[in-house]
Amino acid sequence: MPESDKISRREFLGKAAAGTAAVSLGLFQSAPASGRVLGANDRINIGMIGLGGRGSAIVGELLELSRSGRYRLQIVACCDVWDKRAQDNARRCGDSVKVTRDYREILQMPEVDAVVIATPDHWHAKQSIDAMKAGKDVYCEKPMTLYWDEAKEVARVARETKRVFQCGAQSASDGRWWRAGQIVKAGGIGPIIWSQTGAFRNDPNGDWNWPIQPCRPGVDLDWDMWLGHEFGLAPKRPYDPERYSRFRKYWDYSGGLATDLLYHSLSHLLIGLGGGFPSEVVATGCQTVHGLENDNREVPDNFHTLIRYPQKHVVQMAATQENQTGVAELIRGEYATLSIEGPYVVIRPEPPFRDRMTEMSRNRDIFPDAEVITEKDGQGRERVTEIRVRGIQRAGHMENFLDCVRSREQPSLNADLAYQVMVPIALSVRAYREGRTIYFDPNTETVPGERAPVRPWKQGRRLLR
Image (cartoon, rainbow, N blue to C red; front, top):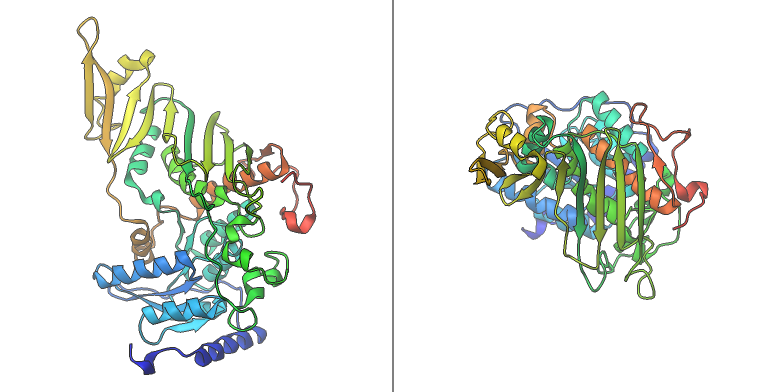
């Protein structure tokens, strides 16, 4: 890029100051706005909000989609509370890219059609709601929010504003799980008994111990904006480079393994199960290796939760950062067990129901284009041992979002489904921290007996962890 096209620090700070002045003058309103109507050949203009590791990776993904010619899009604005990240990513995106520390400036740009939110978890709800009310479609990185009631409000605003909302758990666009959902809904494995999934890593240095960034609060970093204490998002505290650079280790900004990893796992599993809200959640865990003498993290590195659904179906999830040997992702029905193996959805009959499953395997409404593997029993009869069905062809997760920005259809992990995933994830964190079972009423979508949102750092609740 020519030297004259580069964004100077002075220019950046001037634009940031102008944005702050606009906020003080009340230019950012919360009333819903209508978005720009896109024609078939119109370019999709995108604003980036949050440009850490994940946000920067999404910039690369969007630039590649644009270069490939598959999508006509352009990143027109970059926002981050640390100047360097906004400036570095703006340079990647070409000329005339707006840079700012305040995401609300982007929401005031009429040319912006959609925003990508990749900020710390405690900001997701507010930024998503503000964006949709400003008439922008939203791709928000997982988790959807930090607290379950925030997810409920995001889903409500998405319906009210008719904006496209996609939560960034990429496996939710995996066509194998969508095929699994069709099979389960059609009764292909019988009544659902219980399911299992998880997330497993092993990093001797400890997950989320990212490099401490060379930021200078008050100079090139807006620490107060990062905290969000003025908006009631987290407690005010002096600058802490550990919290800034490694936020997933701290309860004020993250739910640890549950919100970072298990949100992914439950997203696709719930697609296979057909969605829905839980009735009760319990969790346990501990700091097995990290967080003892060698690490000041607050969240556990070993986490387990059980989620009961009203249909008397239980989901079991486990996550650890000290052993990467995983458990199979399974949906267990009375008649058969469903798993994902390679390109296939695989169904293996339970022994007492082999005759029933042999008959069902011929039903192409339940098992389309199935590969049926059989063996002869002692009487010479062919009995099914395995049914294999390929996944549904679906676009990738970001492509799915961009397609829906044009079509106005609902994306894979839309606001309503993302909310259904967020409820048990957020309640599992509470169950762990409070040392008790948390109940949820799927009919009223409330935690019985609670009249106000629970924020442990505000209310001084009794916490075991």
